[in-house]
Length: 508
Image (cartoon, rainbow, N blue to C red):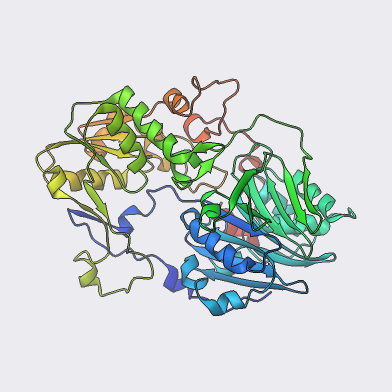
């Protein structure tokens, strides 16, 4: 498995030297106060341009992880790997890189780390040579017993090469005594808990798997008669592929030269897909669980207008994630929609780093106020969610400095009061503003004239449900309710951690 030259880790660290400027927000202002995307996976079987198509699919899934990207291909004789820190386009838009990934089958992954450091050995797909041949795996989600299993594996002699929970799956498959590979794979999945959508590659098969509750999404597609697996339908759209169906919760789908075989080794359970796929993670043009993400977010905004409207002149979205909800709010309330905040889409970590004095002039601004749209007006800001509140505070101040007469703030989701253990990088409870302050305190902190969140029942109604059924919630909504759909084994373990696991423990 090749690990070719990559950018230095130091070059990947975000600059944090920017000072506040009243009418603009910088990239560093958003650090620690936004929901971090999870990961995205893609796989294709039996296509002569497998690696190039996988790279395009990963481009469409870039919103799910911007720290690193990787592709593993198989040419019928050997596996080939390219893994890099940085964006998909930084590496996989180059012809020479794609040419180093020959073969008709490939799997790919874009990453935002929720366990493990941002270093090259953690970049997926991970690969290992097993006694039955090569095995590559890419994982979207988070194992809630990954650290516990890791300790057991190390005690039994396993030599871990990364600090990511995904490697546990490789070792569980390798240690299984079953004869058939699919039985070894199933045995490994029976041992893990938490959220996962997997794409896996062997020398004969492309395999997709989804956790028994369907917390993380995974869809099947078809291009030129060849099967595809992807985290979202937008990855199918970019390559002109046909959507076939969602991989069902608890299903393992295997593609080989004989076609597709579906395995359902787990007892059926009521599905609990993650509600944050609709609130934030999925791209607006994706279809998740049969629902248009864009239309759901508009419905969140419309419900928000029903629940907490105030008399204002314009509706202003916090770009980009707040835009669909703001459209829905505007359409329901009849208040005009205005782009009162302009986002600079051409700022990123690859932008040339000037001197500190130039940075302070706002060269790398991320958001700026559109004074013409808001000066002298009463505005209502719409955002998807609130985490620490520091960004919201800066945006409210930016609006006032640009001449807004009143600034009201609305969130198109309920207050986040509990941490996540399924792949969302959220602070512990003490770092969540809504977990430590009441509504009036939060309003004072961010400096708004009024503040309101979408209610939990309202969120469910916007999803087409009559409300939240406490006995049978249709979604994983634990960040709002504290009701976790799986065991949280790692969170209840008190066993001292071996020294060599300290990095993983700190990142978990």
